Length: 259
Figure 1: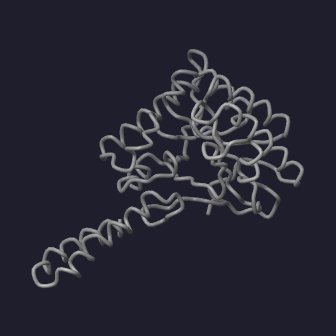
Figure 2: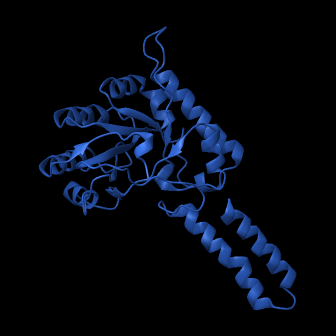
Figure 3: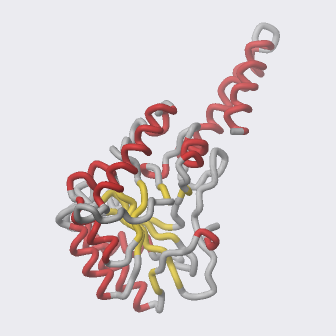
């Protein structure tokens, strides 16, 4: 929390010198805010907590991650594509979607893929300013939804508790580090993403996410209605085809491989 402490210290200093040195006081007041904003809103910034953006591997391997599911239209088709390419992936799941489509979570897990935490409600515009209570509720409710959805038939034991988390759009929160530690979660970022909502066609998305591809990359794609319909599953298909053609395998790295 060094950045938060620095921000507070600078504001105290600004108040103390405000009457005698107005210019420096303004600088002390506002400059730390810009630094804090950078670490809150830039996905790869590391000042508030460790965000893993790559993994260590000596092979031609990447980690494909799919956010915002499960989705009744997209998830089954994505699972079929992954099977066809002998690929494994991690699905960062929204809790509310898990409640609505529990069978899809069991299908994801049953096909050998990983289920990870992506908040309960995906509060894209308010996550950065959420209170500790709200943050804890997002994590706890998400865990409850995932646990109930992947338990399977009555009496079946639930699958292992998710250990990986990705905040909405990679946006952080000043309380996130302690909240994740309390829930045994590791924050996962990415090294390349498709930016599906910005581009107009799936070929551009696939080219974007596979640009400058290297072993150990973490690739981010999305499913569900936030992505334009012509892009959604088609972009995943094109990315998998590009990876296969380049001799890359999609794997799920161990915690020790993350960096």
